[in-house]
Amino acid sequence: MKKCLLLAYFCLMLCNSLMAGDEITGFWKSIDDDTKKPQSVVAIYQYNGKYYGRLILTYDKNGHIKDTIYQPSERAPGVSGDPYYVGLDFLWDLTKDGHKYTDGQIMDPEKGRIYGAEAWRDGNNLIVRGEFLFIGRNQKWPPAGDGDFPPNFQKPDLATLIPKIPQVK
Image (cartoon, rainbow, N blue to C red; front, side, top):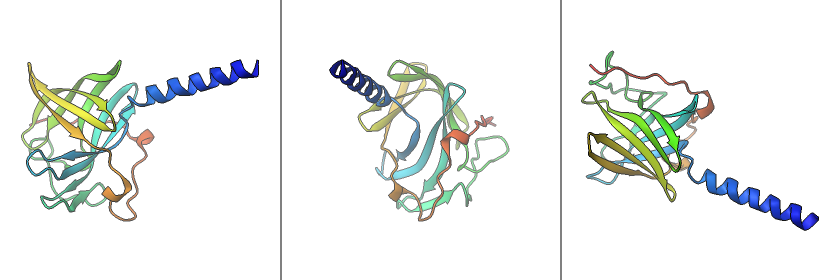
């Protein structure tokens, strides 16, 4: 009897760990396609069964931290109200569909364009795809570690974030 219970427990733990491997919530680094340096850290969070992406900090072209949610400076010209880039929800309404998160939207806050979006895990990385009709591109976002944040930076609690969907100009 004990062996059966122990086996059932290990099977349950294995199933939980396999399912957790698809989870996309957390902090991720977006990487510049040309320079291969980090552009930003994005918090992916869940709210009411859907997934959202918020800019937490940005980097300059040399890979140094430029803006944070606590010290914003640059504004998003393509978004109504010219909000700061950091703190902006630019990815929204992703819905879990098996191993993928689909039916979302992603915005280019500089140009004010919105595209279809989906995301999925590839090992430790997050793949984010933006699409217009049938044409799209993928970006590979590695996880953001503690060294990707400024010293003493207080990461936002993902469970407390509430989406604010921006409007383009």
